[in-house]
Amino acid sequence: MYSDKVMEHFKNPRNVGEIDNPDGVGEVGNPVCGDIMKIFLKIENNIIVDAKFKTFGCGAAIASSSMATELVKGKTLEEAWEVSNRAVAEALEGLPPIKMHCSVLAEEGIHKAINDYRNKQGLSPWEEKHPHSHDHSKDLECQD
Ligand code: FES
Image (cartoon, rainbow, N blue to C red):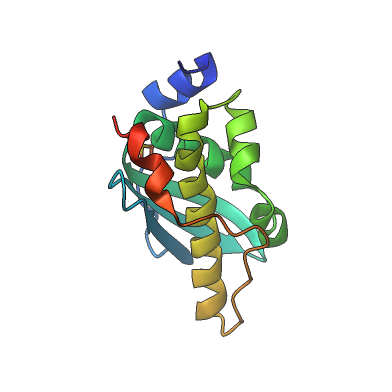
C-alpha cells in the first residue's frame, strides 16, 4: 500500500522532537481520525533554519511530517508557504488516495507555524490560497 519512501520515513523519521524557544509553532488535528501534529520552526532572517515535529498519528502522517520538515528547512518563509501537501506526497513517491488527508495535516501545520511566527512579529497572517475542505466525512474510511 505504501511506497518505499513512505516506509523509510515512517521507520526512520527525520526531525522528530521539539525546538527550544521556537519562533513559530503550529498544532493541527484531524477530528475524524483524531491524529494530531505539532510543528516547530526556528526562523532567522526570514529563513527556516530548523524544523521539528511531534506527531501522534498514523504512519502516513508521520512520514508526511518527516518529509515536510525536510522540505521547508533552508527555505524562505515565502517558499515554505508554497510547499503544498501534494508536493509532500510527491516527495514521498505518492500516498494512497485515502491517505492524502494525512499530508494535508503537514501543510496545515507548517502554515499555522508560519502564521504563529508572523503573529508574534505583529504581521498579518497569510491567507490560504487553496483552502482544504474541512469536511472530513470522507475520511471515515481511513482510520487505521
Ligand atoms: Fe489520520 Fe492519517 S492523519 S489517518
